[in-house]
Image 1: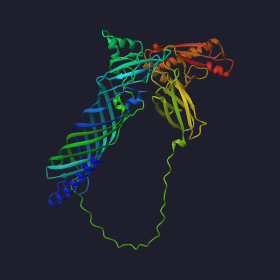
Image 2 (image 1 turned 45 degrees about the vertical axis):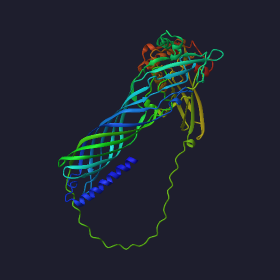
Image 3 (image 1 turned 135 degrees about the vertical axis):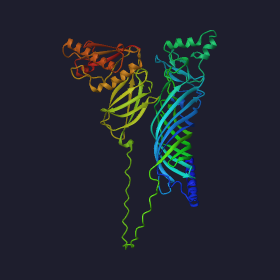
Length: 580
């Protein structure tokens, strides 16, 4: 706001100088110039960035012994290109309006000098333990941000003589397109502390200092008790056994796109001088300032790293950042169109004033704005909690709600496994995915739910492990056929994504039927249905070696075939994890 006030004051100051100059000069240089111009500028400069950081430690469950520094932005550089089309109006042609395109490329660096914390986690064996994270040399990330904007400008110019002039461009820039990429240049230490209860079961110890009988997988403890050992070999050996530990580990993915951000409309001011080399062509030198405000993802589930090798850009761990771009630009303006001011029209004759008969004033009509709908009263509040099927612990993950083919909600469950949202009464399909867990899909019936009420549901997900057998309710076939129904595609797409994420995973697709009909026909139908599921998964890019298909017919019932309910349960497709 202060910058805008200063800019307006500058324009008014030079407007006053313009009036005085026109009163004292015999020639008005601006009025003799064409009204239209097209211009281009190349710019190069520095930038100043202020970042508002979220509370990173709160993203980790039961965090303690935290030592996390503030995000600092440095080494800022920006360069770009402007194309402008403008028009100066009036007889004096000092003020005008302009628009065009602005391209800006920014290069800067985000740094955190200190990063260390411990928190409650669960290992690959389902055991609770204390995970330790540390970046001994801090965290460093290089970013390249590119954007294309549409400026809307108020223009001012004053030609001081037939050569030299002064000009100011002031306005707003609306973002049309932007892209930001990052490169991580850091490594992390992953350490672990296992505490045990009286029965020898792993538990989480919330005390800052571990107990003497805890199992300490830390660099400091190993070097204390093994003066001649190789600490790196020790950590790598435990990692190969399935423990989430390692020293000096680089991210698996060092580069990527920053996706969770929004570039707001920015303020722009550019004062400068001009030199006319021809009556309609001028060189321009200007100092430009642009203030950018970026709203970042502000994800409630943000973790810069958790599992060994994972990495999430620091940009996602910010709420907002304010960026001031200061640059020098050089360019040209070409003026075109008529340079002669239009003569003033002859004054029209002044008619005699009409006879006015005073009429009674009508009463004003007051229109009250319609009240905004309150979702708490007009919809059903749905509270979803995701839980581990085996241990009942909260699971952070993604939730997708669909009504027919339309997506009505796409959000996340936080570290506590919770997600709240509003829906209209109706029937919905709930799709759930979480890292390390089998995707699931359930139906949500709100047909009888009243508006303004609350619906609480708990969804359990099985953790991926060798030997796991699970059934996916949403996989269905046309009656008496091996043709998949369209309602099966969403859950199978999620299954395909899971298999591609874990290429070492091998599953069996097992087809089962009830005992109605011929045994051989049932066996053949179950095999065809299992083959159809495998064919769909491989069509989505899954390696065929990861999927085997087997039809069991009616040989493995899980319910009584003498009832319709039992027969329905026996007509199923099951999945078994053979390798993981």
